[in-house]
Image (cartoon, rainbow, N blue to C red):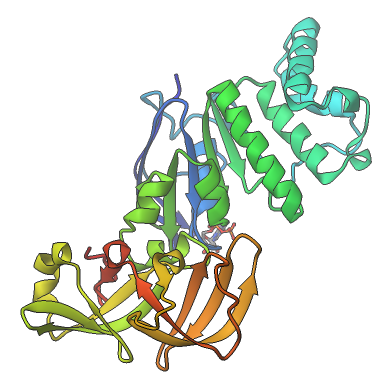
Length: 362
Ligand code: ATP
């Protein structure tokens, strides 16, 4: 068992930089949790506090219900994989993996057994006698993971472990780490600024911004029910379109006016949005939630600025006059730059936000 619980955790560096503000996170045994957010949002600091590499200024950290604030890193039963792998260059792969066990005075036979087992899991048995400089980036990454596995820790921590790999290898290693998690069934906490990594690997995502947790939930929950403008814009690529609008009442129905086109507010949103009549709101619609209307009758009338054909789908950058909109559409039409097109938004999937509080209203 390894649950991890952060209760009102704060980190203030040097009495000045409030890097993590009142973080509350509950991690269940065996969960894969990803902390994600832009550079400087406090995710690495959070991970380092869990590892014990950074003091907790305020709040409580529990692992399996035991308060860990004052427990030294080596006694937390945690292993961390760093972004730069931190391998010892003069040691072989075998010795790099064995090192942590040697200094903990494990018997030789047990060390050997654990290293061989980890090497087999990671498919690096052939590399055990090589030095790190004789390995590719992906192989080094596996060794760094192997060094964590041999420790058989309760909790694995990963700090941007894939950011030094090229795009193709990153995709491959992403799948390998997910498979490793399924195989080991251990609690894993993973830090990245890459929302695709978060979406593809996590059981649960923690989105952070400026030291504050914005939302916690499963990838699909965050995608479909973002709490605010930041989460809505951060999760998903290309990002959600945000259009400043004004709500008005026409013939007993609510209508959102985007300046150069209008959309009917779905009936199920009316009760929450009624109090915003006459006020500005932000209309949010994902690029895939707009359908090409060949008849020219779609609410969104636009000119094609850029066409990005990706094979299975096309990304279009449209201009409606006042607004720029990105659309993801199947390649059912040969779109041309300068072409006049119309799209029909799937309004049941749209979101409305309060521009002041940034909160998602629907
Ligand atoms: P990145 O993706 O760039 O690593 P991050 O989200 O992991 O960013 P942190 O490294 O946790 O962010 O940093 C959070 C804030 O704390 C930043 O403003 C950073 O400048 C500050 N910070 C981090 N370490 C220290 C330190 N040792 N002393 C003072 N401020 C620090």
